Length: 255
Image 1 (cartoon, one colour):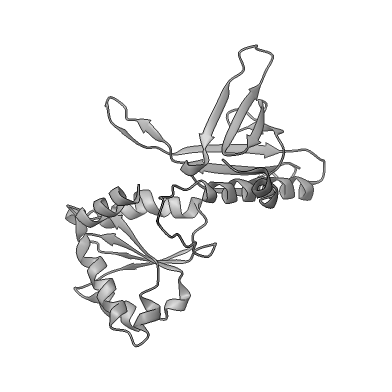
Image 2 (cartoon, helix red, strand yellow):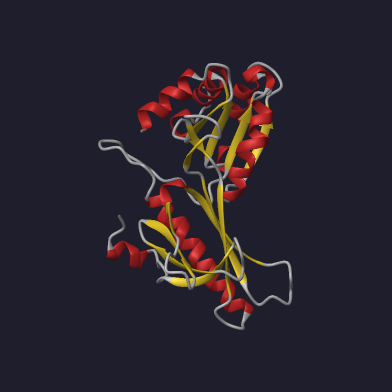
C-alpha cells in the first residue's frame, strides 16, 4: 500500500467524479491509492464498485476527443488482470480498458491538464505496485523506455512475428514504450547487430524467440570492446519459440 508521504510525492488526485466509458452519461467516482477504485454513481442503492489492481496496469494516457466542440478531455487506463477463460477452468491475462471523460471546467486546456494529472498518477502508482522479491536488487529503466525488439520469424513454428504484432505491439503502445523492431534474417544476425550497434539509442533489448536468439545477443554484447558496460543493458525475454524453457524459468523465479 502507498504511504501518505509517498502519495503526496506522486501527486495523487483526490477522489473525483467523471463520466465513465461504458456510458458517458453515467457518472463514476474514482479513488486512487494502492488500487484504482471505480464507484458508479446512481440513484440505485446498490451502487457498483469495481477495484483494479495497479500491478495489472501497464499504462494510462490522456488525450482530447475527436470532436473539437467537446471541451472535455479523456484518460484511458489499460489493465491485464487474470480472468477465467471462456469455457475453461484455466485463467489468463485479459485486456480491460477503462476510459473516463474529464469536464470539470469549460476550459479545454484545464480539463486536459486534469486528465494528464490522473494519467501520470495512475502510471507512477502502478510502477510502485509491481511485484518485488525480498533479497533482489531492482533498478528502474528510464521512462519512457526505448527498446530494441529482435524477433526471429522462424521461431515457434513461424508464428513469433504474428505473436508480436497480434499481442505485444499493442501493449507496448498502451504502455507508451517506443520500440525499434528488427526481424532477424539469418543465423547470428542478432549477434552481429548488437556487437556493432550504438546501444545508447535504446534503454533495453527485448528478444522474442526461443532460447537461441537470446544467446546470440549475449554473445554479441560480450564481443564488444565496451563489453563491461554493454552487458549491463537490460534484457527482456518474450516467449516466441516452441519450448521457451528459459523464459518459463525466468518467469517462475521472478514471482
